[in-house]
Image 1 (cartoon, helix red, strand yellow):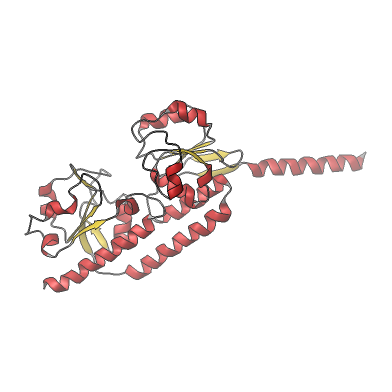
Image 2 (image 1 turned 90 degrees about the vertical axis):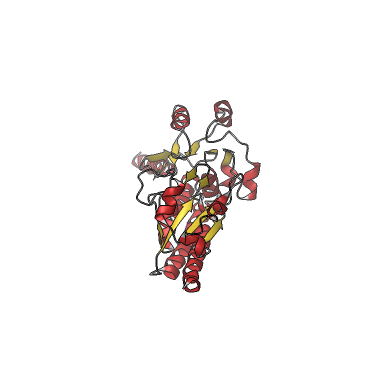
Length: 296
């Protein structure tokens, strides 16, 4: 009898241990604890950068729905769309029976997030604020999907590339710059945005870093007054880009031929490709430094 009881207790302990291990808990970018009783297998991605993070973490096959512009990697284009950052198809989302929804607090409206939260489905808030957060996001999403064998080396590789960039551009002479997100109206980003973290890594100084709004509208007069040494814009359809500044020949950025265009998909999305975007940004900022010599 004692032997049977001992075997029973051992089995119960093993079952309890197995049950305890099945629960997965991570902290999202808003500081909330996200707990899943088993690895996520059916995921809704509510932002293009989230889709890229999930693929990098080894969970591309688990994404059952995504918002528009989720177009990287190539396989992401085949994921059924559930709407965009303005309007989502709640009925379709419910029919997909997701076990995890990854939202973007600054990209999805509060109304959308409230609607999704009402479904009672676990929700992970993704908002990388620093470049280091990108690799960490890959790792945490990998934990939620039980794809750590892929996520861990992927995160390590991103951290390694970031460390190389930091070493290469450490202590470089500063370059004051204006980062142009859009020109109708004229949008930029403040110092709290992750793009400014990339600018700082390269030795750049965002001339509008001290503004309180994350993505403020500024005036042409304000940019002229700041007189940046370089201006960076991203390739966007229906945008005049950095060419709108060419008539202002007294501006230092125009005089020194420092009007640069970058791939917005690499730099404006806080996903794994932002490390490559940061590398491209650093190269252009270094070019602006070289132009100083030519301007003398």
